[in-house]
Image 1 (cartoon, rainbow, N blue to C red):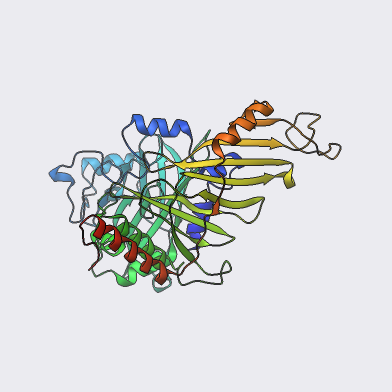
Image 2: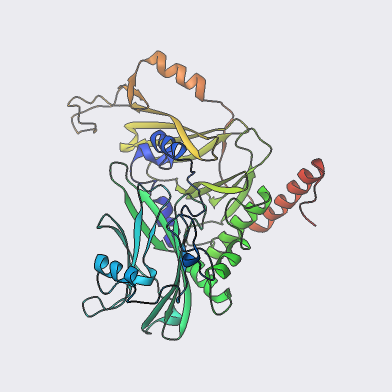
Length: 436
């Protein structure tokens, strides 16, 4: 649970400009469109062959892969020898995979290493072109503490929490104890990518306790979503049930004191359609926002923090597809206003950002210095200085008025009741029966 908060906030604290945008940029969106893929792609991109088949899923070079313990155990095979030449004799060659991470430029290698004389612990790395993008600290649950690493039995790659970043799911054995671990992926930085993978401990412990022995990737997916991949949900209600289930498995729904206040939910109508958006979070601390489109669930806001560091929170104009955020820097010396919306691909985008400088920057260093005073400074629209008339025109075009806060107000049990009520009403209207 802690790891999810850290990973989710990674894009929020790297800079004021990126914070409300959730890390989305027009260039990234255009590139995704050109490549014909979305940020929440949950599929392989290479053709599967007979040699690549495993008991769980396809072992390919795409966005989602898996391998069982016996998938490629011939350490003397040409393929494995080549991997050991690339990554060293300590690499677990049969579980090294070249994969595509959502929102990552180019293919990367997932490389696990067995304990050795120089590195006595099991470890994992993500590499590209011979460079280590990040190391992954293995999570070992209490029931396996003190036992020796035996094997990496399976690994798979998909977006477990629907936030648009590829996650890593592993099945590992220490001693005679087998357990599953989910590592949530996150990326920040725009001139250079900085990737990280954090273990989601409470979710991992839940899956390890509930999975049937022997564990498999298919069994893990069955626990998470009833076996469905993102894009296969039959209704928005079903997808939101999966998001609610995940919050329970992560431990958020039951926790009330770690970050203050209850973990609450709501259903709100952000855009113009009749499908509500799902809100969850801890009011005054952070918020999550989910939307549904064409069988897919997308997490638009992933633990977006507010209530501190000048961030007042996130608002929306009901059914107008317009969200707003005020964020002050340097104790109010700079005020940022962001306007966000859900684009046609079901992703968050920030078409408008207004930066108002409220001091006289005599030396032009972009900082309020001791010898400088507050006063009316320049205003920038999407990074370009603008005239007062241009600023007024932007506010007239983007500020919709009658905003409401994006925050939870009901419990998990209550929001499930709302889901059932709304989906039953929608089903009757369309001649369907969604709930029994």
